[in-house]
Length: 407
Ligand SMILES: NC(=O)c1ccc[n+]([C@@H]2O[C@H](COP(=O)([O-])OP(=O)(O)OC[C@H]3O[C@@H](n4cnc5c(N)ncnc54)[C@H](OP(=O)(O)O)[C@@H]3O)[C@@H](O)[C@H]2O)c1
Image 1: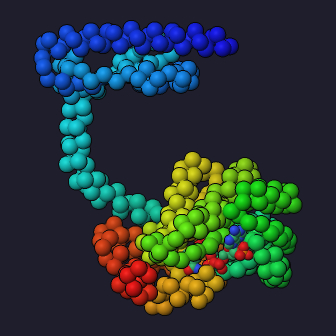
Image 2: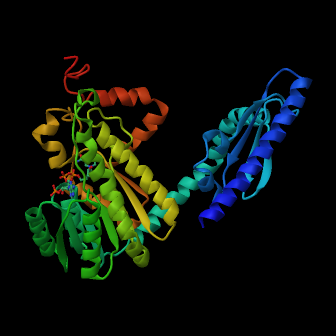
């Protein structure tokens, strides 16, 4: 095996050496012709197993980069010699032509896109409207179906449990506080859920996520909806942070806590043609101060599930929920209100928010913003981001610049 690798390595080295010689020779010929060096010749080793074979080689042998005078008449060309197996192929790209094409697209694309939108938008909006009405009438009946909710011990998650329970769904409730989960489970049974299982777990731990998905599927035999809701928020101006690692749990819970659970749930959701309901936040697009890591985690969630939606196609439905201010423990405690001024923003009840989320998931909506007036936000961000940033800054306690350093 070692001798095969060694002999392949030697063969590749020999090829590179002969290539280097021929390029250098061509370079000298061209240098005699003109003194202006304009062309870059690069050799990229792309295909396997060559990169592995070449790993122990010195850098200049791995990727031989020659700066030479015009070898050919493409004045700003890049010649890429691609090593594929033992054969070389040459691709010529005229950078100038590409630059020109980009300039042309820059000028032509915006007006063409606006024109197309003008024609496309009216029928598209009509289609969306009718599709919404049809989906409202053919909403999924979740009676007897299995719904797993993370962060079910309080707030939105707790009320999601009650709402699904009213519709007759069987529930798997996940959070760290087992005593709180048991209270929610009892109330869910009372409201109409035929079966509820409580699984205490920490979503930021991979093994816990595998355990709660396995346990729920073993118990119920299937999984229909995964409501990924658990999250934490830690407040602070970025500049005031002394231990940056203190914010790692925010990402582990809010982003990874969702990704892990989804990873283990996907095979079961695929079987049941199920749904994922992701509780993100308007913070995913609104630059609210003092919650930079929370905002970043929510933005990552949105992007992550938008990508999964493309990957899953119609096999697994994904509803991305972006709630605004909802009256829950998360935003009502002293720790939150003393740091961020949100008193002037009307908050919605967790119950109302949960009702809207379950209805939206059953309708098969792609997205839900609750309350819906927050939907002007992304438009505002696109058209006049300064205005949105100014509005977000209003929430900062002790403006201007409430950083300890400046106060
Ligand atoms: N309230 C708002 O204004 C608002 C706005 C936008 C988005 N949201 C989002 O809505 C979701 C629910 O938040 P909420 O307002 O209902 O807050 P909440 O009442 O504080 O609920 C958070 C839930 O997450 C659970 N949780 C936290 N860390 C966990 C972990 N490591 N493992 C397992 N469970 C964990 C908590 O239970 P344990 O402590 O028992 O583990 C709790 O049940 C969150 O994703 C939040 O980001 C809320």
